Length: 496
Image (cartoon, rainbow, N blue to C red):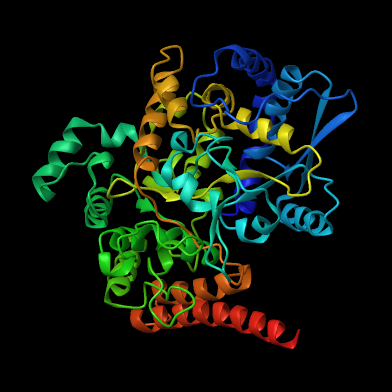
């Protein structure tokens, strides 16, 4: 998911409790993994390492879900499979873990063998990570958006793309909806009679249908709000605007240049190619297509709480849905663990974003170039990426897999509750095709992102009347930051 600092807190308590009871089950699946691993998880070049009793494999990550409980469970399984090896999981607060990992990696001391990063932070750690290849991890088993979002890293100076990390889960923005409302036959018939399209969220072909849904439910006084999108300023560029604009981007070859994921490192908010004379792809949204998306977004927000009074966020959107005030939310899969296993969980359905896609964002792990235990570290990555482990992790902690085969195991396992299998099926449908990808270019800092968000926020709340101006200002802020990065590098190079 995007950097999930605000999102982790909401899930920590629930996941910690789950992990306490899940350890045994995940431990058991680790035992099965040693004997039932399929061809999708075996390595042709990395053999099991005989370790001395003093060998310690250190994994650095952030506190809370999904990384901490999942990596702790993997550590237990790995120690059982590798007698004499101790896996030490070191955690830091989410706001501090990248800086701690980066400081250690830059020292070159190899204190951390494995480090964690997210979709938007790969650019900081990638130069210090060991390149991966298909002889170590079966890349064809990884969902394409997961690999493209930040498993691959594009060097901003050379343009070379390297595979540096494997996803420990899949996550991203999809449609979470109230099944009691959308599965109501009377409402389905009334909606079709009025709008001549299906009410089922899995059939929504574009955001115009979402506007019809908003109008239907609010005008009939069924719910107070329509489909909620995050409206806090910091989430607008990379979450909300990206989710709406992404639909137009993937359907416009002039913008995506035939590459729906965009240029690695830049994603959907930039063109899918680098024009002649440019060092980077220009922003993709400061045009008539972006205006259409931003105007659509403003209309969608008109069916939500006024953002100047109550901003919809990761932390409160699911509550607004569960309380019956909203009909659905464009929210993260990572919000579902907070209700999974409860009596209300089966009420919530999952569907892809309009156009059958997802705004991707998730967590990865990579191996430090300076690790003294590279083979062991690669075997740990193999375990975490294995379908068997990811299936059991989903059952116990509700973290959605990134392995295609793990979904096959889940969907064919009748002992897993039906609503969980339905969630998994919808997540796979969303994440198995294309996705809207947030940029991770190192110059796009949190302050730059906030500045871009301010322009968008000013338009959707009415304090800026021109969508063209909002988008031009936002695009200029991004381009200026990137140009400054290259200028600074050139100045440093010439002075040396």
